[in-house]
Length: 132
Image 1 (spheres, helix red, strand yellow):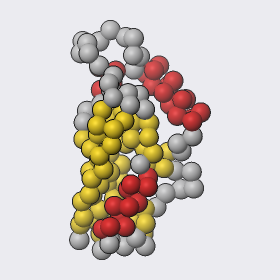
Image 2: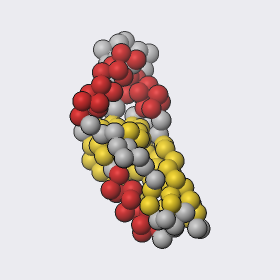
Image 3: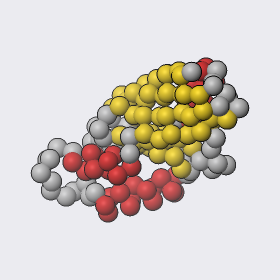
Image 4: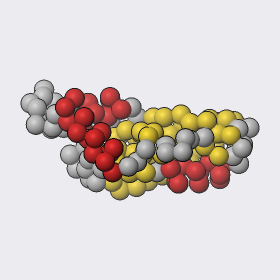
């Protein structure tokens, strides 16, 4: 059995936003009790991250990504190369176990979307649950 749902949201440039509740709602709607849930963001300058969404940690992530893919660097892809690079490093999808009709996350884990683009964007997140 499988089920697909979507979340659409407006997200600011360089914002990281918790989408855990929306994912949990889709898993509940699916009726699937045990399986896996894949969360995928459509677009090449966003990422799906599973970790604690604590403001100081989010800032640490942003600071570390600035070191890895600096926004002021001169790139061949002039417009927003650093946005693409950050998204590539972080990844566009995550897979989470589903047990007893709920996603399995640790105490401090949450599912987050990051918009690394230079502009605010409307993002579509595709959530597919496969199981029984």
